[in-house]
Image (cartoon, rainbow, N blue to C red; front, top):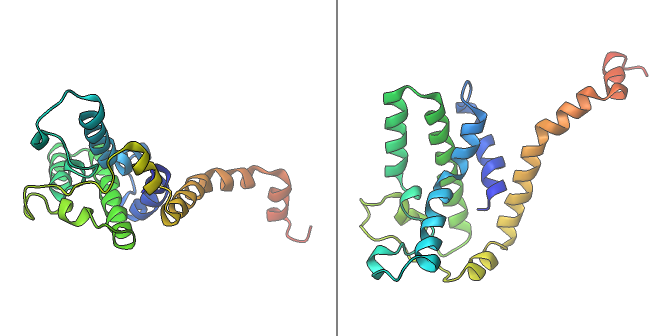
Length: 179
């Protein structure tokens, strides 16, 4: 999924468990798996020195997209009793849930083996694209674009509802329904 989908839909999915947690940390958490894995893949693949293949991540879903990653973050949050780390972990969990859901709709299925790493094996699946351009074209899938639009709308909802409550015409209508 693309960033606004993760930010908007992910934060709404996590909302029932996010009471009292930092909204900013939750939003950052919805992007953390991609913020870890995508730069690793593209950094090693395109900008890094020529390394042996076994050192280069095979795709954009590696360590940041694993259950082990979530368990480590959750453990750290509980040990430190940090609400920010709890919010980050909750956001990352929503990211994995959304990726897994969309994976079922848009093959090839690459997340399920990643989530269970290393229990499902030591190798990560190879990305179904080799270049940034191919990755971009894959991102233009109608379902992904629809999620982006929904994500933007969900992110804008609080702003829109605040504006309407501050609008004097609407405020008068709320106070005096006859007008």
